[in-house]
Image (cartoon, rainbow, N blue to C red):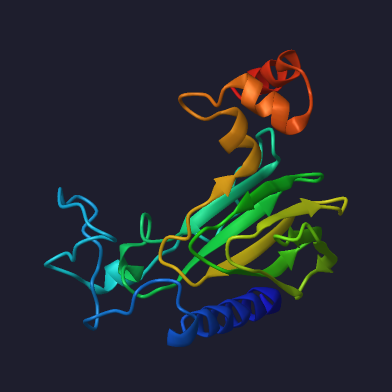
Length: 216
C-alpha cells in the first residue's frame, strides 16, 4: 500500500511538471474543459468538445492492474490518453502504465509529439535513448527511480530483473503518438520495398523478407 501511495504521488508530480505551459507539447487550451467527443464525425486537429459532461469524463481506472505481457515483446502498454480518457482533451497531458514480463522489452520507438518521463513501480529495467548524433544514453533503474526520454528521440526499456517489472509514464501531450521502429519498417502497409530496406541495412533482399515474415 505504501508503495502504491508513493507511486500515485510521483505520478501526479510527473504530470503537473509536464503540464506546465512552457513545456506543453500541445496547443494552449481556449476554455476550461473540452471533453473529447470521440464519436463526432468532425475532423480537426484534436477532438471536438462533447456537449454534456460529468465527473466520470475526468476519471480513468485503467492503470490499476497489470497488462497482459503474453506477446512476442513481453510487454504491455495501457494508455490513458485522449483516445481512452476523453477528459484530457486540450489539457496537454496523458499517462500510461507499462508492464514487462521477465526479459520483456518495450522495443525501440519514438513519440513525435511528447517527452516521456517514467517512474518505476516494480522490477529492474535497462532504459535508454539515442540522440540525433547517434549517442546512446542508458541507465539501469529500479523501484522509485525516474528517467526521462526527450521528445522525438528513439528510446527503449528492457526488463533486466528475474521477475516482472512495471512503470508509470507521463507525457506532455494528450496523444503522444508512438512509432515502433521495427514495426514501422517491417510491417508497414503497403510494405516498404525490400530492396530499400536491404540497402539501408546492408543485407540481402532475402534477409529483409525473412524479417518481414516474422511481423505478419
